[in-house]
Length: 150
Image 1 (cartoon, rainbow, N blue to C red):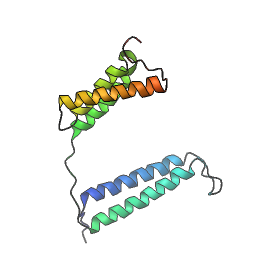
Image 2: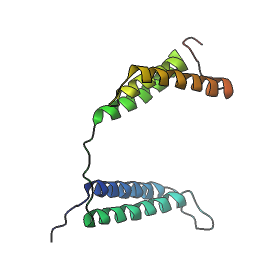
Image 3: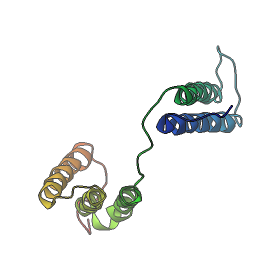
Image 4: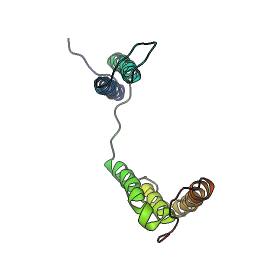
């Protein structure tokens, strides 16, 4: 008897849950388990990992029984540009300040989307930069330079 995957999207989601659950369980074995009354540092990750494996198995088995959608095409450009925008934000924050780093984050992150409009990106940048300055620098008093040389 040949097993056929009827819902590929659910099949891969189930495998992902199982992989994360097993990873939690394996990593947690480096710590003490404890008991339900006196939980050790490994107790929660082990239980969470076990629940993820059970959930993943349920989804995986269901993917073999019920029809479902196919896995959509994966686009690398948005993923690469979003990761790049976050990394550049972190690298530019101290030398160029919060406003310019936020500008780089917004423009490069928006370039990863399918619908890039300069007007929307500019509005998002202004709102996000003003919000960040007023909340993090003025409100919370974090020592983040707002402009280069501060």
